[in-house]
Length: 98
Image (cartoon, rainbow, N blue to C red; front, side, top):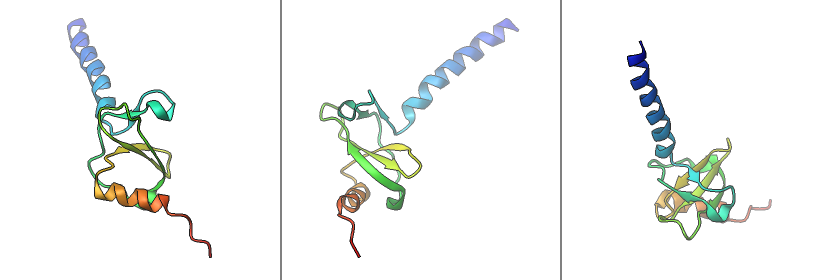
């Protein structure tokens, strides 16, 4: 029984280390200036689901923008992608007063 527990424990530890690294979320301190993205989301996020964004630090290896969804999820996106540019333009537009 003990011989089965060791490989199982090792596999669980490895899995726990790999899963967070594959998510397209920001990492770093809770200060916006030091946040970087390991990876960017691969599929477009509907613009209506994004309420706010902020840029990652200039010192990061890859440029990124963090999109904050209506549910409070932070998602790293590539600011060079057309769908990301469209969301940023929409959010930068002043609200229309009627």
